[in-house]
Length: 466
Ligand code: HAM
Image (cartoon, rainbow, N blue to C red; front, side, top):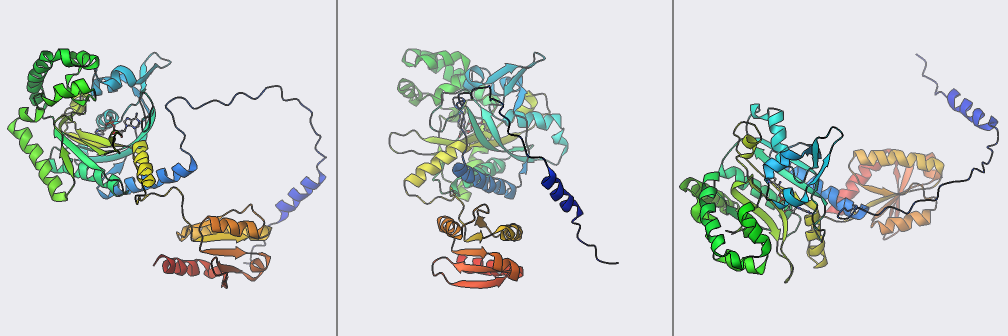
């Protein structure tokens, strides 16, 4: 069969059409609308700009690979959920439900909420899709925006992002330790000095026994408590243990500790979790006041945090725990579960602070390139795009600005990008099927066949990375 002649008919016709076209009339139509005043960001919201975005993308890559290495699979649930999902799961009397949730009425009158967290959504999804029929446990990771109407400050936004991992379907100390290890390693690998605070709040029964004692104690000290804590005695007394108020601190220091009210089973369970953490050499602090304040938690609760400079509050990068009763509370079968959520904005803040102190952190704000592809002329531009594709497929990062026409400007950009070599493609190289590879420091140039450019740069990259 004769080789197919490249079809040019279409392009020829197109050229003619363009040539024949009547000159475009200039319209004098007036723009009637005045441009609006540029809208501002909604309070508590944040744009993620390119430099931060690079770090975010790397975080996402690192965290998802780590979770996947621990056997977690990606899931995603909607941002909008029925408001009562959270009201029932997190419980009335919590700040999130009482003050912070974005709730609105949908067109059919139903109450919807912008999710303030996703543990409740994960449990709902597990029930809705019958995930209990899968081999247990079901291990899921997920990432996305959450909404809480809090007072904005450094590391606290009204829209923020969490990276969550949850294990549903088993009750075993090793699973709690595995989750804590995973959260710790995700953060620690970035170069952030993180510590784990841990406590056990026992089973529901343990907690009810403890609450009788604790509420009695709080009532006896009512006069010394802050106004906020006085209100909490009846609504959500455990939250008082979280209070930062100085007056409350004195009362808390003398309070009965939940750990002393755990049953033998709950205590043994907790000891085993700690043994696993010792075995894994995960640094932790026992914190008898850590309760995490949401209704769904039971047994192990933990937080990952970094201690700030003197006077700076310590920054909670994430938190989690067991929530054995939640699936049943939401109408599913009794299903033990545990998980954690990491706050990405907080992790970014911790990275910024560590970087300011000159500490070695893993996530850069800009990519670094060894190679820069410079081109001259339209034909070279076209060829350059092919080379970009070949390099991408071979996983060789290359910087370029194909809209630039001056070689000098492109070589300046190559220097700015930190490239050690420029790959130059001019008219002559296009004709010869070659590229010039120029050492940016010495100026020494080499001519390489375009077909061998991937092989050549792969070798060069390996040499440079040694
Ligand atoms: P949480 O402690 O409410 O837990 O949130 C986890 C992390 O999200 C916090 O430690 C913090 O880093 C970040 N975070 C919370 N609120 C904000 C905010 N307003 N601005 C910026 N970051 C924030 C939960 O949400 C649980 N659902 C975690 C979990 C998953 N438990 C079991 N599975």
